[in-house]
Structure formats: structure tokens, C-alpha cells
Length: 353
Ligand SMILES: C=C(O[C@@H]1CC(C(=O)O)=C[C@@H](OP(=O)(O)O)[C@H]1O)C(=O)O
Image 1 (cartoon, rainbow, N blue to C red):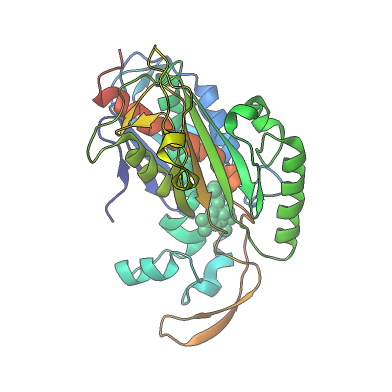
Image 2: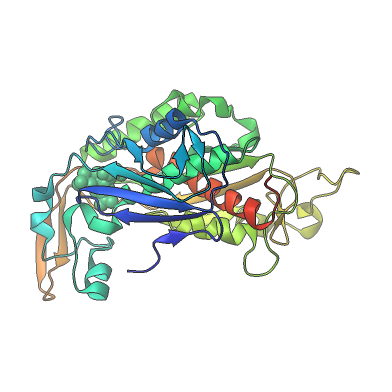
């Protein structure tokens, strides 16, 4: 299986399956001399971990990270940073019923056809549990990116959407509720809805929005490695992601150029920011903002029709511990992937000192 690494200079390689003994990773290219706040890294993991509230999977994992290399007396040494997160709460028997059949819209079918061998327990390598490793690396990248603020939040669940731009929201409130939506009223409605959906054994999708502030001018490459292309790849590599848009996104296509162009101020900043902080694939110093669309989780706790390995129609009953909606736990994952992209360009574009 290829494709387990991300980044060019600040790189992350991850390993591990949902029901194996552990997940882990190696971060390479992190500069030396960064004083790490290890508690802050664990706090990021706590924001992502399963079992954290009544609206997420009830698998109980502490997701405690142990570092094995690359850090001496709390400071990065410039060597590879190896880390491990143990799996402690696997219930693999919950998965024996799908050993020989495929959950519709899950990775079960494609993994089986591609590799011929499938660790069906908890989704194996296709499990979103892998994203814990991204959160570790992202937390280190965030600490390397002093002064840059990356804030994600839930802006949509099902058809419920926050119809306000990030700069009209109080983003200090993201962690004040279990949905991670900065509008208290909307968060309460979303929570009720997610609980209703969970009660039916069903799932629902949603949107995570993200803003990156204080990015200097000049990150990103002009042709294939555009900053927004790398952000798009990073976000689309997160489990269950179906869409990515930045700046004015799909809505911007309905505007005229004369409305959409961001007029300059004399210092090079712009009066509007439909560009989303990126022009020609390169950051222009304005806020970078984007939306990430997550589909409803494929595993339903309901009866469903599918096929087995031989192609016979079978009726299955979903079981196990699953997220009725992934967006509350996806918030720190989106931030982590954004941090990895920005950190990588910091090093590539030699703006880090
Ligand atoms: C454990 C996590 O999420 C898991 C993601 C997942 C899947 O199929 O992706 C299946 C479930 O695993 P299990 O049945 O073992 O509880 C989720 O709980 C996690 O994110 O840490």
C-alpha cells in the first residue's frame, strides 16, 4: 500500500489500523530548536478522540501519544519524530458479520478488490482513526508556525447551515459546545438533530469551515503546487470528505468580474477577499478561508441491503460504535491538515527561520 506519506519537506508518514495494537507515525523535516508544548499536542488529540461526547462514536480511547524520538528535553532535535498511539478499546467481534460482505459506500469493496486482503475490523486502514496521527503532526506544525492562527469550526450539519462568514462569528466560542459550532443557538439545534438521526441508526453529513490568519505573502507555487491545490488535496484526503472550496468558492461563479475582483488598498491588502487569501496559487497576505464538505458516515445501525464477496444479495444489520455525524470531531483534523500544508510551504519557500 503506497500513499502513506504527506508533504515535501515537512513530512508525515503514518501507520496503523483501527483494531491493530497501535497507530503511529514519523514526522520528518521538522526544524530543530522548536520548544514543544507536549500538553498542547495532547489537547489537540483530546479534541479529536472518540467517546468525547454523546454525539460521537462511543469507542473509548484515551489516544495518549508517546514520542520515541526527535525531541530532547522538550525541544525538537531536527531528527525524525517518531510517535505511537495505542489502541485500547477494540471490539473486533462487532465486525465479524461484515467479514464476507461490503457496507455500501464504505471502503470495504474497493480495498478488497484492490488488495485481495482486507482487515475488516473497524475499517482497518480505511478507518478515520488514522487521522489521530495527522492531529499529532498538525499540532507540532502549529507550534512551528508561531503567529499563524488556524481555526476551524462546524458551519453545517445536514441542511442546517450557518449563513454568516467567519468574520461575523465569535470564533472564541468554537469549543464552548460539543458540536464545535460558534453560534450557540445553531449548535443546540444541530446537537438535537444529530441525536435524532443517531436515534434512528442513521447518519448525516456536514461542513467544516476553516480560516488561517497571518499567513505571509508568498506561500505556494504557481503551477501544479498551488497553495489552494495542496490545501484541497490535504482536505480531500480526510476520510468522508466530498468537497473543498476556498474563497468565494462555487458561489463566486455566479458573480460578475467587476463585483468579484478584490480592489487593492495602497499597502497591497485588498478591500474585499473573494480570492480567499490566494492569487495565482500564492498567498497574498489576506486571510485564507475554505469549506470542507463531509458526507454522511457509510455505516448505518439499520438493516441494509448489499452484496457478499460472491456477488449474492444479502440483508445485513449494522452494528458497532460509529459517529452519526463526523464534523464535530473533524474540526481538529481540518486544522491539522491545514497546518501541515502551511508548514511545508514555509520550509519550501524558505520563509521559516
Ligand atoms: C475509533 C475511531 O473511530 C472509528 C472509525 C470507524 C471507521 O470505520 O472509520 C469505525 C469505528 O471504530 P470502532 O467500531 O472500532 O469503534 C469508529 O469508532 C476514532 O476515530 O478514533
